[in-house]
Image (cartoon, rainbow, N blue to C red; front, side, top):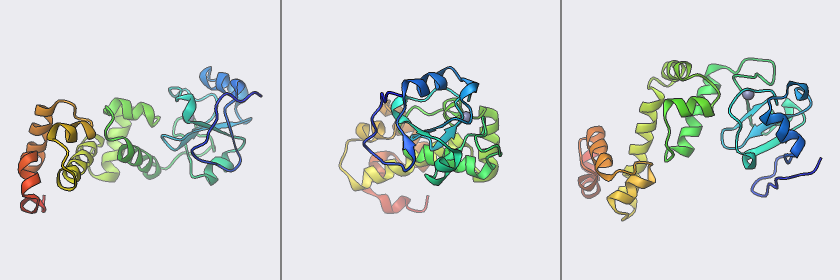
Length: 201
Ligand SMILES: [Zn+2]
Protein backbone atom coordinates (compact mmCIF):
# COMPACT_ATOMS: atom_id res chain seq x y z
CA UNK A 1 0.00 0.00 0.00
CA UNK A 2 1.44 3.36 -0.98
CA UNK A 3 1.56 5.86 1.82
CA UNK A 4 -0.05 9.21 1.03
CA UNK A 5 0.18 10.88 4.42
CA UNK A 6 3.29 11.38 6.42
CA UNK A 7 3.08 11.88 10.13
CA UNK A 8 5.96 13.64 11.76
CA UNK A 9 4.45 15.26 14.82
CA UNK A 10 4.02 12.16 16.96
CA UNK A 11 5.10 8.57 16.76
CA UNK A 12 2.63 5.89 17.74
CA UNK A 13 3.92 2.39 18.15
CA UNK A 14 2.24 -0.12 15.85
CA UNK A 15 0.71 2.73 13.89
CA UNK A 16 0.74 2.97 10.11
CA UNK A 17 0.22 5.92 7.85
CA UNK A 18 -2.95 6.04 5.78
CA UNK A 19 -2.72 4.37 2.40
CA UNK A 20 -5.07 5.09 -0.47
CA UNK A 21 -6.70 1.73 0.16
CA UNK A 22 -7.30 2.57 3.83
CA UNK A 23 -8.67 5.97 2.95
CA UNK A 24 -11.06 4.63 0.32
CA UNK A 25 -12.32 2.04 2.79
CA UNK A 26 -12.88 4.76 5.40
CA UNK A 27 -14.71 7.24 3.20
CA UNK A 28 -16.89 4.56 1.63
CA UNK A 29 -17.62 2.92 5.05
CA UNK A 30 -16.51 -0.36 3.52
CA UNK A 31 -17.61 -3.10 5.88
CA UNK A 32 -15.38 -5.69 4.15
CA UNK A 33 -12.37 -4.01 5.78
CA UNK A 34 -13.75 -4.33 9.31
CA UNK A 35 -11.33 -6.35 11.41
CA UNK A 36 -8.47 -5.74 8.94
CA UNK A 37 -7.58 -2.36 10.38
CA UNK A 38 -8.86 0.40 12.65
CA UNK A 39 -8.50 4.12 12.16
CA UNK A 40 -7.81 6.57 14.95
CA UNK A 41 -8.35 10.32 14.80
CA UNK A 42 -5.73 12.37 16.62
CA UNK A 43 -7.93 15.43 17.12
CA UNK A 44 -10.66 13.53 18.97
CA UNK A 45 -8.72 10.62 20.46
CA UNK A 46 -11.37 8.22 19.13
CA UNK A 47 -10.83 5.15 16.96
CA UNK A 48 -13.26 3.46 14.59
CA UNK A 49 -13.89 0.54 12.31
CA UNK A 50 -13.60 1.31 8.58
CA UNK A 51 -17.37 0.90 8.21
CA UNK A 52 -18.20 3.57 10.81
CA UNK A 53 -20.90 5.94 9.58
CA UNK A 54 -19.36 8.89 11.39
CA UNK A 55 -18.36 11.92 9.37
CA UNK A 56 -14.99 11.22 7.69
CA UNK A 57 -12.15 12.92 9.56
CA UNK A 58 -9.46 14.99 7.88
CA UNK A 59 -6.96 12.59 6.39
CA UNK A 60 -3.97 14.30 8.04
CA UNK A 61 -5.43 13.51 11.47
CA UNK A 62 -5.84 9.78 10.82
CA UNK A 63 -3.58 7.02 12.07
CA UNK A 64 -4.07 3.36 11.20
CA UNK A 65 -3.79 0.46 13.64
CA UNK A 66 -3.96 -3.21 12.78
CA UNK A 67 -5.72 -4.13 16.02
CA UNK A 68 -8.02 -2.41 18.49
CA UNK A 69 -5.58 -3.29 21.26
CA UNK A 70 -2.85 -1.24 19.62
CA UNK A 71 -5.15 1.77 19.44
CA UNK A 72 -6.13 1.29 23.08
CA UNK A 73 -2.47 1.04 24.06
CA UNK A 74 -1.92 4.45 22.50
CA UNK A 75 -4.78 5.82 24.61
CA UNK A 76 -7.36 6.13 21.86
CA UNK A 77 -10.89 5.42 22.99
CA UNK A 78 -13.37 3.25 21.10
CA UNK A 79 -16.06 5.05 19.11
CA UNK A 80 -19.49 4.98 20.68
CA UNK A 81 -21.15 4.44 17.33
CA UNK A 82 -19.20 1.59 15.69
CA UNK A 83 -17.87 -0.01 18.92
CA UNK A 84 -14.51 -1.21 17.53
CA UNK A 85 -13.78 -3.32 20.61
CA UNK A 86 -17.22 -4.89 20.51
CA UNK A 87 -18.00 -3.24 23.81
CA UNK A 88 -19.92 -0.16 24.60
CA UNK A 89 -17.84 2.87 25.54
CA UNK A 90 -18.89 3.77 29.09
CA UNK A 91 -20.66 7.12 29.31
CA UNK A 92 -18.10 8.66 31.62
CA UNK A 93 -15.32 7.84 29.13
CA UNK A 94 -17.30 9.32 26.27
CA UNK A 95 -17.92 12.48 28.30
CA UNK A 96 -14.18 12.59 29.07
CA UNK A 97 -13.49 12.51 25.30
CA UNK A 98 -15.94 15.36 24.71
CA UNK A 99 -14.57 17.39 27.64
CA UNK A 100 -10.99 17.01 26.43
CA UNK A 101 -12.07 17.98 22.93
CA UNK A 102 -13.66 21.19 24.23
CA UNK A 103 -10.60 21.94 26.36
CA UNK A 104 -8.42 21.81 23.25
CA UNK A 105 -10.80 23.39 20.74
CA UNK A 106 -12.87 25.97 22.69
CA UNK A 107 -11.78 28.64 20.19
CA UNK A 108 -13.49 26.84 17.31
CA UNK A 109 -17.08 27.40 16.31
CA UNK A 110 -18.44 24.68 18.60
CA UNK A 111 -22.14 23.93 18.88
CA UNK A 112 -23.96 21.03 20.44
CA UNK A 113 -24.54 19.68 16.92
CA UNK A 114 -20.96 20.00 15.71
CA UNK A 115 -19.63 18.55 18.94
CA UNK A 116 -21.99 15.58 18.70
CA UNK A 117 -20.95 14.96 15.11
CA UNK A 118 -17.23 15.16 15.93
CA UNK A 119 -17.60 12.93 18.99
CA UNK A 120 -19.85 10.40 17.29
CA UNK A 121 -23.17 10.69 19.07
CA UNK A 122 -26.51 12.44 18.76
CA UNK A 123 -26.93 16.00 20.07
CA UNK A 124 -29.77 14.91 22.35
CA UNK A 125 -27.80 12.06 23.85
CA UNK A 126 -24.68 14.20 24.23
CA UNK A 127 -26.59 16.95 26.02
CA UNK A 128 -28.22 14.54 28.47
CA UNK A 129 -25.19 12.35 29.12
CA UNK A 130 -22.79 15.25 29.54
CA UNK A 131 -25.14 17.02 31.94
CA UNK A 132 -25.66 13.88 34.02
CA UNK A 133 -21.91 13.38 34.44
CA UNK A 134 -20.52 16.94 34.46
CA UNK A 135 -23.60 18.57 36.04
CA UNK A 136 -23.57 21.28 33.37
CA UNK A 137 -24.50 21.07 29.69
CA UNK A 138 -21.84 20.92 26.94
CA UNK A 139 -22.72 24.46 25.84
CA UNK A 140 -22.44 25.74 29.42
CA UNK A 141 -19.08 23.99 29.67
CA UNK A 142 -17.87 25.69 26.45
CA UNK A 143 -18.92 29.05 27.94
CA UNK A 144 -17.17 28.29 31.21
CA UNK A 145 -13.89 27.37 29.50
CA UNK A 146 -14.05 30.45 27.27
CA UNK A 147 -14.55 32.73 30.27
CA UNK A 148 -11.72 31.04 32.14
CA UNK A 149 -9.36 31.49 29.18
CA UNK A 150 -10.51 35.08 28.60
CA UNK A 151 -9.73 35.90 32.25
CA UNK A 152 -6.25 34.43 31.85
CA UNK A 153 -5.58 36.45 28.70
CA UNK A 154 -6.91 39.62 30.32
CA UNK A 155 -4.75 39.33 33.40
CA UNK A 156 -1.63 37.68 32.01
CA UNK A 157 -1.30 39.49 28.67
CA UNK A 158 -1.87 42.99 27.35
CA UNK A 159 -3.80 41.81 24.30
CA UNK A 160 -6.66 44.05 23.26
CA UNK A 161 -10.22 43.17 24.26
CA UNK A 162 -11.08 42.29 20.68
CA UNK A 163 -7.98 40.06 20.41
CA UNK A 164 -9.00 38.25 23.58
CA UNK A 165 -12.45 37.73 22.08
CA UNK A 166 -10.91 36.27 18.91
CA UNK A 167 -8.66 33.98 20.95
CA UNK A 168 -11.62 32.37 22.69
CA UNK A 169 -13.63 32.05 19.48
CA UNK A 170 -15.86 35.10 19.96
CA UNK A 171 -15.17 37.21 16.91
CA UNK A 172 -17.81 39.84 17.51
CA UNK A 173 -16.26 42.13 20.11
CA UNK A 174 -19.44 43.74 21.38
CA UNK A 175 -21.00 40.33 21.76
CA UNK A 176 -17.88 39.15 23.62
CA UNK A 177 -18.12 42.11 26.03
CA UNK A 178 -21.83 41.48 26.65
CA UNK A 179 -21.21 37.76 27.13
CA UNK A 180 -18.31 38.35 29.52
CA UNK A 181 -20.36 40.81 31.58
CA UNK A 182 -23.33 38.46 31.74
CA UNK A 183 -21.12 35.58 32.90
CA UNK A 184 -18.93 37.46 35.40
CA UNK A 185 -20.80 40.65 36.32
CA UNK A 186 -17.87 42.72 35.07
CA UNK A 187 -16.72 44.03 31.70
CA UNK A 188 -13.47 42.60 30.33
CA UNK A 189 -11.73 45.93 30.88
CA UNK A 190 -12.90 46.21 34.51
CA UNK A 191 -11.84 42.65 35.10
CA UNK A 192 -8.39 43.38 33.71
CA UNK A 193 -7.96 46.30 36.10
CA UNK A 194 -9.50 44.64 39.16
CA UNK A 195 -9.16 40.87 38.82
CA UNK A 196 -9.10 40.40 42.60
CA UNK A 197 -12.57 41.89 42.99
CA UNK A 198 -13.91 39.08 40.86
CA UNK A 199 -11.82 36.16 41.93
CA UNK A 200 -14.60 34.32 43.73
CA UNK A 201 -16.85 34.10 40.67
ZN1 LIG B 1 -16.90 4.87 14.81
